Image (cartoon, rainbow, N blue to C red):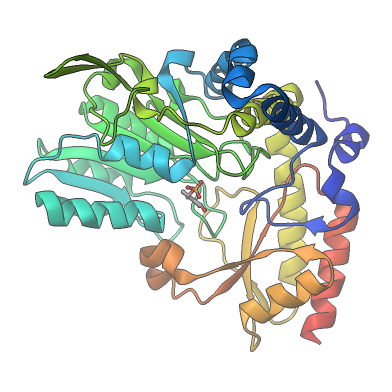
Length: 392
Ligand SMILES: Cc1ncc(COP(=O)(O)O)c(C=O)c1O
């Protein structure tokens, strides 16, 4: 399918009310995602939650196929969980770290992931080392090669960090991880839904993502991919009757698929909504989505750079739909609030969300504008003129 902008605009009810440039925070759901969830909630209210689950069992199974198709995996490698953080943590805390193990990560690593590394360092005496990036924002792969030894247990990287628009070259990390037989984990929370993601190409062992961001799905749902050959090596930190079978007074048996990382109780309306969101994105095509996002982001970056007093903060040639900027002499929070009063959603990006990168690049609080394919040039023009009014 090619991009049918009229249909896309009609399918996006929120577009009538606001200019939504907070797609990296939580995007606008399509009418289809909304209807899917409401239909299931109605079913739960009318026939009972367990009965609704049973009635929709085929559709619920289908969601795993949709996630698998989205990232080129198979359905038994997918766990559907509460959010990206739960997915990521279920995999990370399942790794059998030993004292002396080394974790290699990236400069623009996401706050919650880094906190988990620090926690693991405290609990298990592992070390955390950062793969440097060059002046151009690109990962220094030759330095990474020289950092590898038999104690490197995990390479773990955020694909698209929360700010700056950087797209880390995860496939290049995957090549090195695979060559040295090191576990490789990718936080694809901000990239899934805005560009094609292929776990075979990235060569990752684990990958986590959320529904509400570029996938345009509901809040409170996410997923985890774990490569088939790795699943059996990972014991989830929390298991219940979903992930394991109770065999006897002294035994349980873990499932052999990725559902071992799930809990029994789940938000089924949200899961079905996630499926509808993925199917919608697949229908449009992830290449088409990425092309339109790039077009709009380049347009917006150009317009922002023309405004006196505005500095965009981009640290790499590989950019996506996220554009962060600051305004000379005006606090970012105040700009975000004034934009919102004018019907324009952006968000505040604080240094603490990517602390190492923010310290290195001396980043202040930033305004984050994140475009999606359902935005258009008219909206971006309005955003620019409102911003100019706020500044002057
Ligand atoms: C890079 C990155 N990873 C993980 C997360 C956490 O996602 P969730 O809130 O769905 O757990 C975020 C959220 O902003 C993020 O930007």
